[in-house]
Amino acid sequence: MIKANLLGGSGFAGAEILRRLLQHPGVEVVRVGAADHLGQPIAAAHPHLEGMTNLRFEALSPAEAVKDVDVVIMGLPHDVSVEVMREARPQGVRVLDLSGAFRLKEPLAYERYYGKPHSSPELLAQFVYGLPEFYRAELAGARFVASPGCFATCIQLALAPFARAGLLSGPVHTVAATGSSGAGAQPLVTTHHPTRASNLRTYRPLTHAHAPEIVENLLRFGARELQLSFVPVSAPLARGIFATSFFSVPERFSEADLKATLEAAYANERFVRVPTARLPEVIAVAHSNYAEVGVVTGEVVDGQRQVVVFSALDNLIRGGAGQAVQNLNLMLGFEESLTLTEPGTYP
Image (cartoon, rainbow, N blue to C red; front, side, top):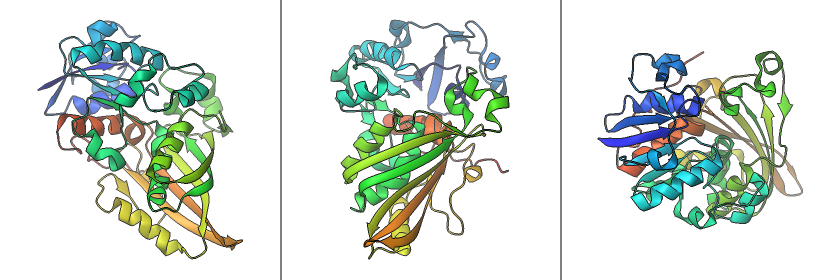
């Protein structure tokens, strides 16, 4: 059995990781670190896991977090992730990080979007970006993996096939609505039910921290002269992201051509679907590790056909914990879909 410590385990992403790893035939979670519920059983924060484990939440220092384990899974603030990484690296412990600490290769982009210089920029190049459909070979057996942000996953799954096909260039505009669970387990004014349940509001327009990882990877996939304008929206739902991205292609490319591009990209992918009789929607993927993508085209303006790509996923699972487990399976040599194949709940 692979022994794993989960850090930041009292949050929503921690709940989803535990839900899956407590049923994993090849991974044993031996300790769960947290900043709250200390000494209490896991069910104190995650009532749906009552009776599934005898583990309790612990306060773990970085040195304790990497002791006597094979892998550390981190759902921590960026700076704390770096501290744990400094301990894990010389000990030969694998690291799977869900924060933004190691997603970018360019330190200046980190400083611009996260508000301060990276404290260990030499570590950035050592991490594999955990988007399995596009980095599967690098993820297999990797020591250090940075799981993508939830918005970044949703938007890249929609746009990456067009970047790889040489069809993504110039300005791209994206508006993406997200559920309140993306803000974390601690209540905030903006996640308080009375003001969230009947409201739509934007936050961090054009400055969201997931934007640079989207741009960095789309350029790597083949996008040219990319200019991303990303506006996130706080939506009145608990789970899910729905992203709408706008760009243009030369007039000769039809809607059928573009749909075929998506279908070819994901023909052999278990967790990304291109619906045949409808467009993507959150309810079809909520509570699951599946994502959906779809495309429509509009009128031609100055020789350029207008394109709209839609994508949907569960922000906590495919946008977070489920993708982390998918990456963990690849890192450790397990079947990639282990503990992840159940469909979502409907309605």
